[in-house]
Length: 329
Image (cartoon, rainbow, N blue to C red):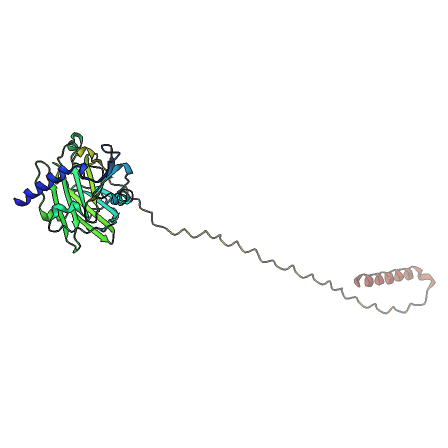
C-alpha cells in the first residue's frame, strides 16, 4: 500500500511540474498532427536488445514531431541531436504492440535508481505512453505509462507509472519482460512491448488506431528529455500523442534462386565435305609403239609396166613419216 501511495505522490508531483519545470523547452510543431503507419510484424519480436530482420519496420520522423525539455540549458544541443539521429522501429501483432530504437546517449545511459525506480525519469531511461483514441481525441490523461532502464550491474529498472481506468497494474515479472537494452558505450539499442490487454478492451486489428509517445531521458545527473510527440514529459495531455494506424505486414521480396544459364547451343558440326578425290592423274599418253619401219624392200627394178604401184608405195612411206612426228610432241 505504501508503495502505491508513494507512486501516486510522485505522479502528482511530476504532473504538477508541467512544462514550466524545464529550464529550456521546445514544443513539437506537429502536436496533434503526427501520424505513423505501422505494419504488422513478419517475425515475432524477441525482447533481447537486438533488432532482427522481420521484427519491425523503420518509422521516419520529422523534426517537428519532437520536443525537448532539459534542466540545464547546456544540454539542449545533445537533446536536439537525438531528435534527428535516433532510429525508430515499430510493429504489432495479435498480442502486443512493439517499439524499438537505436540512439546515442551522449552522457552514458545506465540508470542509477535501482532502489528508487519512481525517479528514473531523472536519469538514463525510456518512458513509454500508450492510450486509446478516446483519450487522444478528448485530451484525457487515461493511458498506460511505464519507465524502464538498466542498471550498470545489468539489472532491469522499471516502474508502471500509470494504470488506465478499469485496468489492473501489471505485475513486476510481466513488466520486466516487456523490454530489454543493449548498451555498448554510448550506443543504445532498446526494445519495448506492451500487451493490448494493458490498456485496450480487446486486441486491435488492421486499420485501428492508438496514441503513443516516447521519452528519451539522457541527462547525466538530472533530467534531459527528448520526446517523440507528447503526452508524457512536460504535461499529460494525450491529445499530443502520435496517432498510430495499424497496417498489414510488409511483403518480403525474395530473390529467385539463380539458375545457371543454359550452355550455348553448339552448332552441329558441318557435314564433312566429301573428300576431294584427286582427279585421276592424266594417263600418260603412251605412244603406240611405232613399228620400226620395215626396211624398205629393195625396190625391184622399175618396170615400165608397173608405174601405179610405185606411186602407191611412195604415198605409204610419206604417211608413216607424218605419224612419227606427231607422236613426238
